[in-house]
Length: 288
Image (cartoon, rainbow, N blue to C red; front, side, top):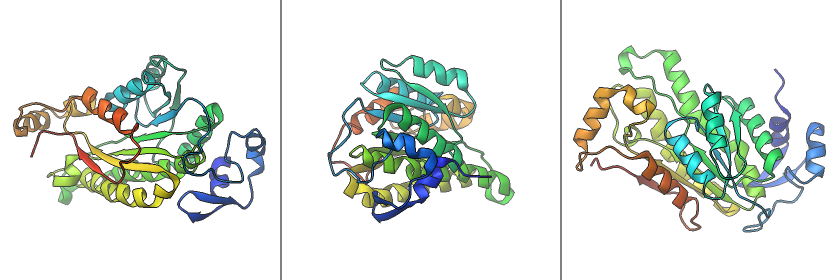
């Protein structure tokens, strides 16, 4: 299967350091967009030399749960929002319609680089910049290691870990073109402490912590801040699906409370407004 134009375009770049790029050959399909200045020009912009205009945020897995709360809050805080979804188009359109500024529901399987590259192209054609990327999309398929199926392992790693690889690979160059920005990866307590029955989920979420710190170093020259959040157990659709786990999490809390999606979304909105915080892991939990 032929890769989309945007993937071909990105593969034509030679990287000097981080997102500082030299265009070797621009894909002909992208030429018209490039000439209108909406896709990357021949010279990368320097630190702080962003494209003038309203900031743009991309939130993956934004049709439900924490992603929905985050997309709506950013959409009421001065951002255009690309509301990513995979299986819930009506819910995603409701989120996009609930923002103050024009927003866009964009379908993409984050574990598929072709899908993500096409989403990046759509977003950049629409608004000409990208300032914030929230890697929230995730799945869980629980099971003990000795009984765990290879297909389940591959799928959880594909969505939860490779998904972040795909989005950063596609959006970081556009963010650099916009003068910098913020990437926030959503990890989990399972990735920090470990939890029986979450071998793949825990492995993927632990890897996001290492990925965050590596990306923070690599992307700092382009004024791109990269941080990681452990939001804690929340009563979202994913959280309420496992009632025993939710009850246990509340019992482990020294406040006897679950984490609040609104508070987590508020922290995200605060973090993307900072300029000197990167490479950090924030635990928004009350379990020790």
